[in-house]
Every structure is written in structure tokens, then in C-alpha cells.
Amino acid sequence: MPDTSIATTPTTSAETIERTVHELRASFEGGLTRPLDFRLDQLRKLERMMTEREPELLAALAEDLGKSALEGWMTEVGFAMQELKHAIKKLPRWARARRVPA
Image (cartoon, rainbow, N blue to C red):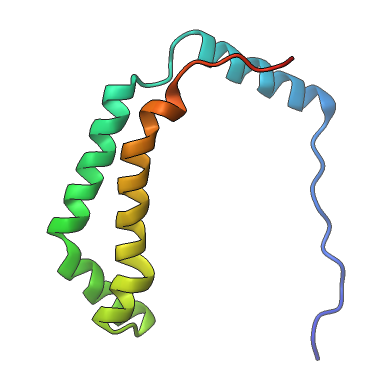
């Protein structure tokens, strides 16, 4: 018999939300975010690792999910590689400072 009970969603107090937003803004304004060059370098390293380790990634997908090499590449590895290439290309634009209405 299926479970028909209704799951409850935990609530967060307004004070907790306000404190979290304050901490995140202070972190951002304090320059704790990584520089663009660092983030691009990390993305390129991830891309290189996925290229170098593609056979192992495909083997793990076959073992864990039963995916053939073609299916694993098309639905997982190739997709992730395209997303990485897109992020590397667009990150400088995404990271640019811009004015937003307040």
C-alpha cells in the first residue's frame, strides 16, 4: 500500500533569513568571491580532467547505471562537456558588473 501521508516542509524564520542574507552580502562585499581568472582556470581544469578520464567516466556509467558508452557520452559526458564549454565562453560576460534596478 503506498504511503499517502503528506510531507511537511521545514520553515525558516525571518530572523534566520535576514541573518543569512546579511552574511552573504558581507562575504560578497568583502571580496571573498574568486577572481574571474581563477574560476576560468577551474573550469578548464575540469574540462581537461573529463577529457582525460572519459574512459573511466563511461565505465562508471556502464557499471552504475547500465549505460552503453554511446548512451553515457550522449546523455552525461558530452552534455557536461558542452555545458563546460558554454560556461567558459560566457563566464566573462556573466561576471561583468552591471546596474540593476533596486
